[in-house]
Length: 289
Image (cartoon, rainbow, N blue to C red):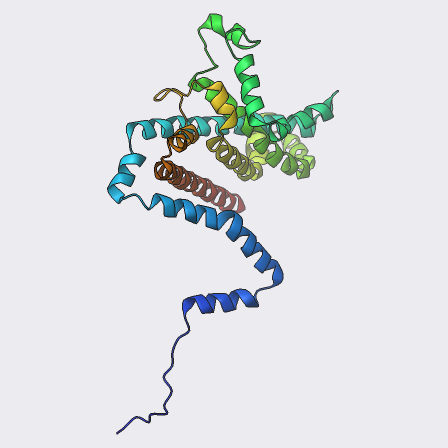
């Protein structure tokens, strides 16, 4: 039995052509979104991974796990987590006061919360370094107690707390404004104390929002450079953070080494943010039961 020469052989179109055809069929809003994200997000990240991949795997591992790099990871991530968690507590408290109470100069204080958004980070770092120095307004009070803030790791933490605080406040504040106070009054009428009302009634629906603010604050603290470089001594194995190490490598024209550290920061930050998002999803499922 012979096969006719006119028989057609089915050929699958290339993957890129199928992808392009699907993109063309998308609404124009989707096309603009994909184009913007590609130019502003996907391509820069891809370029960073591509540059880091020029190093052999052994060299990549050596740079990423060197003693200096591990020390900067320790300072950067542990201090950022501490700052984010602290702001999770006090940022929620500040949002509560701004929503539930009326007092003089409330609008001024409310607007001041956004100051770290508008203030250049280098100016913020210079101001914090001056205020918390041994001769500063706050540092002079702490110096007799043996507490040194400026040009130490503690100063790095203060800078991270300063720049990440608005993320928690502005995330929690709208949710608090939408919460009905009648639910709290009902809990009080049933004999619940204020602490029981907060723990059983207010905190469960508020907890995912607090986690969102903590995640945003953590992300901001990890990437902070301008304020921390001013208030820290930038001494290796003491208070040197990873973004400053990246800048130092760039000054030495070690572009691949800088991108290796950047990739490690990106991967660790992404893993931690995914863990926080998983915790948020888990808390929502728990609340729905």
